[in-house]
Amino acid sequence: MTPSKDTSFAAHVSDQFASYEQDRQTASQDAIYATSNGVPMPHPYETQRVGENGPLLLQDFHLVDLLSHFDRERIPERVVHAKGSGAHGVFECTNPIPELCSADIFSTKGKKCPITARFSTVGGESGSHDCARDPRGFSVKFRTEDGNWDVVANNTPVFFLRDPAKFPYFIHTQKRDPSTHLTHADDSTMFWDYLSNNPESIHQVMILMGDRGIPDGYRFMHGYSGHSFKLVNRQGDWVYTQIHFKSQQGTKFITQADSSNKSPDYSQKDLYEAIQRGEYPKWNVEIQTMTPKQAEELWEKQKINVFDLTHVWPQGQFPRRKVGEFTLNENAINYFAEIEQVAFNPAHMPPGIEPSADPVLQSRLFSYPDTHRHRIGVNYQQLPVNASRTAFKYGNFQRDGSMAFYNQGARANYLSSIDPIKFKPRSIDLDKTHGHFTGEAITFLSEIRPEDFNAPRALWQKVFDEPARERFIGNVAGKMAVCKEKEFIKREIAIFREVDDNIATRLEKATGVKGYSGISNLRFNGTHNGMTKDAKLKYANGINVTMGKSVTKNNGAPTFGAHKGLSSIAVNGTNGA
Picture (cartoon, rainbow, N blue to C red):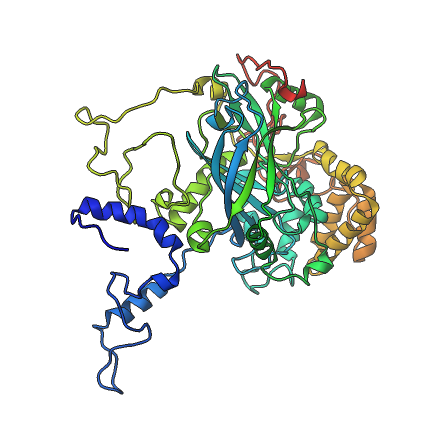
């Protein structure tokens, strides 16, 4: 690459920007070996020393540069979702929904935008096995003309918790033991200790220990937002929504026995090689929608909470509706630059998409970008894989920080009257979208209730066939076999008994451990027990609730009148009407 004859700094910067993609595509045969500051070196293994048998020289910049960079090659791995794979592709809107959502991405049939997707396991470190029994992360970065939209999803529609402060501690129990440094493969004590004290996890446990616990690679699994979001139209009316990514390849699973025969990088190999062969995986993007009034009725009549990450929306009442599809058709050329450094943030939402009051989602809106600023750096969004692709040139007053590249030139770094920045009119009435929340500050912790077992019971009785039930019992019993504390097994069997006595009976036979008769006589350290009549057992860890509410009648759900002064969207096609 011949340098420009223009010796100005402006020309240099222009060349650097243009050369990023050139460098990404350059073959080794077309590059000349040089130090990091561009000085050619005749051989990478040579060193400078005093004579043929003397000490090294500190002036050997090549060696110092080499070792210093090598010592810093690793950035902190993700605390969760450390082991992952990804690819690039394109989203296309097939069924516009302007009556529901003002986001440009859903405005017109045929509207396209580039995407990057990353799949991952959750608990293991970056070198862990792809075929671990674990939920899978499923994140997609849509580079829309109105800014990036990051859907940070999983391959399961629910999760283990609904109280956000539990998340860091739950993840601790999914990691290595702090003393023995063993994983769950050898010691599952922490795993069952947490689950048996937080019974709202049972729905996710049922899914995890079922066939979906080990998907057959990343191409053959669905994705779910889990959280409720809001879609807002140009009139300011809004509905709650759940987002689904439905695999056009269908779904497949790997049994526990077969998983040990797979490569540690099985899912990475499968995804990468499929794309290289031209077998591009595709997913439908589908939504469920629910009006605020319907959300209130759903709680009052069926005890399903749209703000609860352990609950699901009945698809018979709220059918899925396709809005588009995406295809992964381009592998990363450099894994670190394009997959390890990609950063997804659920707070990244273009106009027309807003968060709900789901408390776990609300906590993630802070936690994810905070993680990226620590792991990658405060200017992580300047990296090409994270950069937006808007239909306008944008700027702001953020400046400096580590590795600032786009530092916005000489433009004012404050709201200047001399050098003013432009503004676009607000397109979303945030007061109307979020202003219905009024109330006093309270302390809150959810409690386990009978309705929390309805969906897991349906999963066991109506979704699993008998071979699936047998595999489920085997998977759970195998995990319980390496738990050192039988008390946790007794408690977990009691939780399973609330789902269906048949599960508990079969587990007792498989494990040789007699579980408790149910949870009404148990106290949990992490969750209030709404199924006991004993006041001494009701409150989590025996806490004193006379100061502060902690327990509420609605368990955090929207009740009648919670959405005051809101009109509902009445559009043909909403919720299948």
